Image (cartoon, rainbow, N blue to C red; front, top):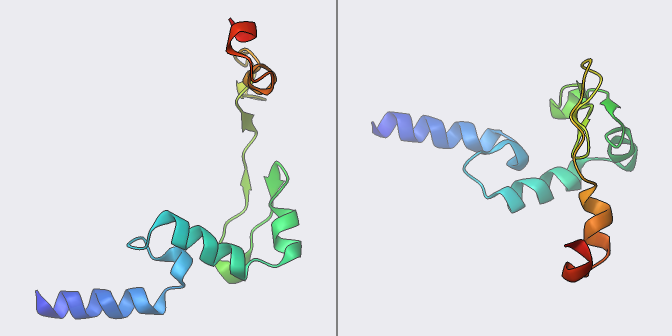
Length: 95
């Protein structure tokens, strides 16, 4: 058991902080934001984001959002526009 703990500790120390699952989410997010370049961050803003190989971030296509659910998969569900309703900051108006 001690050998496992030593090996797992050594392994986690070789992993970048943003990939260490034992670290808090805030810590991991902040660590990732520090190593992403401005160009990386811009490339991740799109719906179809390229891989960032040096950080082992795979490419992905996340064509989903809160209004339509999973879109472009033939039919999509349409929900009330929560962003517009929330922007009113008026619970009575919302009702």
